[in-house]
Length: 331
Image (tube, rainbow, N blue to C red):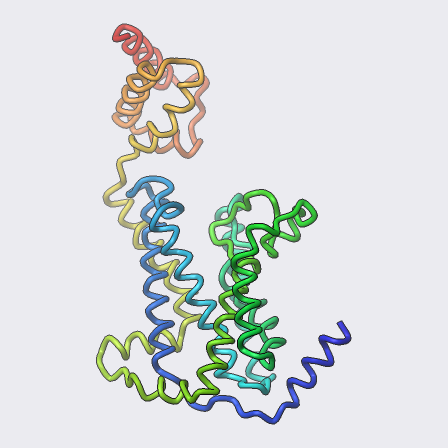
């Protein structure tokens, strides 16, 4: 710790100059990433309200899409550290910005804990950005090749570094536990600090080769789309905090006007439970029958959300009895 403190102190006293002026191309890149994130979150909202298949955003192409979005944000965090500080840390704006990110991440933790305590966000993208920004300061004076090597090692070795020594819930932010962590937005330090370091390395190379100045002149963003993306990129934190509540509210209101058909969701849950004691053919008929009749009776939503008291409910008893009899007859 003493070495780290001395190192950071020397870094703060370096006489190198930071890059002055904003490079619009990076603002546009950040804006594109924000739009992509909004698309992903809107799809997640549709999944939450059952307009698309359950698990859609957690697998296949959507899973890769989400990881590319997170990686691009963190890569840009690394470049932004070089742009903001160069080799000399500007402590006052850094602490102010870091404080805003920490407060926003804590707000997200509190809100998600109140809304969905089983999968609340305890270390999401903002938490990772805050910690990575702080840790990234220690790498600003290192050679780009060494920084990039550290970044790639973190990314590619993380799957092999999991250990039971880090299984305590208080250490889940590290990302090296041996069990699956349940959270709606989980971006742990390993492997996600890797893209930040690669971004720092790329930023330093561009700076040394005069690449930053060339990128600054490459794109002026005078067209409406470019200006809009630039605006988003320059107000990324505000957009991040606002967009999801707005999208969620839109889908919620739509669900009141045109509710999703919950019968496929019910069958997906019913069939595996039924198959533990009955044949697959019976369960397919039984789940189809009960799902349709619960839907007609207006009970399906309460059943799926565990808001129905089954014992003594005459409608539930009647549906179960009649569907069981019908399914048996057809065997």
